[in-house]
Length: 409
Image (cartoon, rainbow, N blue to C red; front, side, top):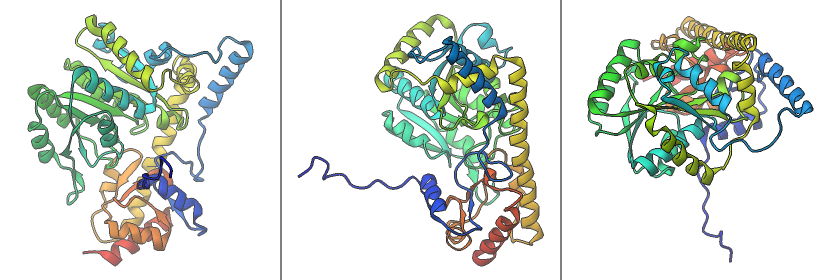
């Protein structure tokens, strides 16, 4: 008899199971369109040249013992959080000018969401959270495991128009009780790639203000979506300019390629700085009981780049390389699908933005593509555009054409 006899197997996480299935597949034509990680035109991971330079600088500092492996403060590396917060809010941010915004180093964007959720539940007493339908697969789990019991969805994707379900979104948020937490994707919505326009963001802000809702932005793709840091941060900066208090989780996994370094930041914007010390003291206790201290290496890489004007500019060029390749693949894939006279309207492939495309393919089509064409994509029809390369784009388009033609309604 074992204490662990009662344990039953948990369902696999779809995106990671796809990766395992892809690795086990021996077909030479196989294509991985699942995991959200950048790939070069050759389908390889890319260590950004500017990251290599930063790591050489850090290695020299280790050699000189000007940095070491001592614990960081519980709330993280101060120079990193300051730089990350300024990158998000902009150097001219009224919140920074008034000293009422600050950052907390977290275990990437996931950790920033969890730290924020824990604080809202334990300290503020929040219990209702809204997130888009669909959304990133971890949002609900993070808030559920933080103790939230009212997990609600607001409409976001219109499957017929393959665009934003704007009226439904407004109606659902309009019915949210005061003080509800509203998860908003700052840019490059995951999984749909559909973002509100600036006019629509203004109306969302109006509604949040009118209904007294708390915005919690998730910013995993700043710079990676459009190629411009400022463009991708517009929504967050607009809400700050309107006087909102808010949280924003930031991840440096995508825009720095630091997937396994878990470099993230929770930006906090308050009405004034009078409660800031109390806030930090309470969050310190929450983090202390979860993981005590954050890791240093990834944060030091980001800090080294953001604090050096020459490296900062080089990094911005790297971002443009990544975002431009994805935009090019979108255009190329759409053209090929249309040239094959694939049934349906495919302009959403190019109107969507960021790493992912919500193709509109049915689950039946997706399973056919996995089993028969060796295309590994989520059953929701989401594909990672990074997995599309000049070497496989024709095969991907033909496979999609086959699936749609076979199963069209």
